[in-house]
Length: 280
Image (cartoon, rainbow, N blue to C red; front, side, top):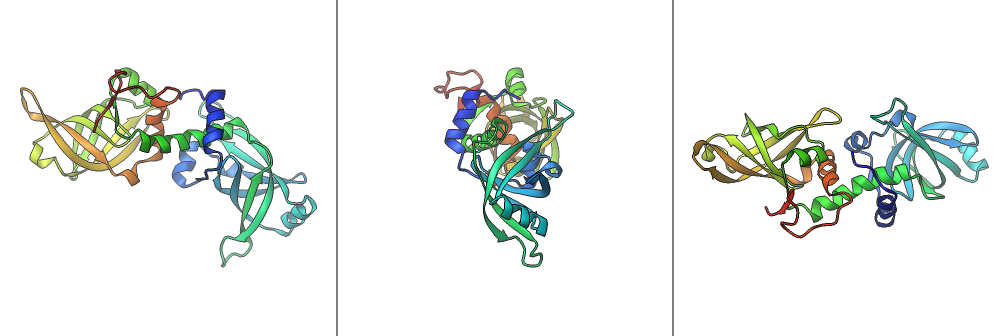
């Protein structure tokens, strides 16, 4: 994973500080949030909570509003510290930190369980760089997935390494039939690859591309449609195919992998970079 510099942290805070990130199951997995170690601290005591969403300026959390917590909030004038915790693949101990905050509002979470509430939390100071970096990388990937969705990344040993993709050799399910394929290029919106098969049985078919990942060893599944075929000279049994992903189904993890290659670099003119080309 690329290092997030202090300059990037400052840019993330400037551009994204008011934008909320909802901690869905997918986002929890990508950010490595450690939910069991997240809690509210007030007057030296702590209560478990769930981070529903967070920006760089505040958060919405779900908790059980026990009498003890009510009393503590009243005594502290609604001032708390929110503890975040994230797993670190390179270390045994998770990354954890407190963010000073103030409760702005309390609303019911579930009518059937009145003790569960949403707490609207406003941070009373800029949060640690670790939180800004975690949220900023995810938000930047979402922005670039739209701004730079047509920029193709040519598959080379170097580009695969930068994106954390294990190999150009992959597998694809086309109209329910599994096939081996060799990646030629990828983008936020699609991919091109070499595959065995007859074009009339492949073009315009639904497909799922299984992309092997590194760090951790995993696979990301990309749904889409085969939209184009190009013949390979001298071979009638294989072809080069273009796949367009279903935009709303593109995994966050994939967006962040692609974004790793763009991070910290200015957008170059078409053809100025051997790894990145514009085009569908």
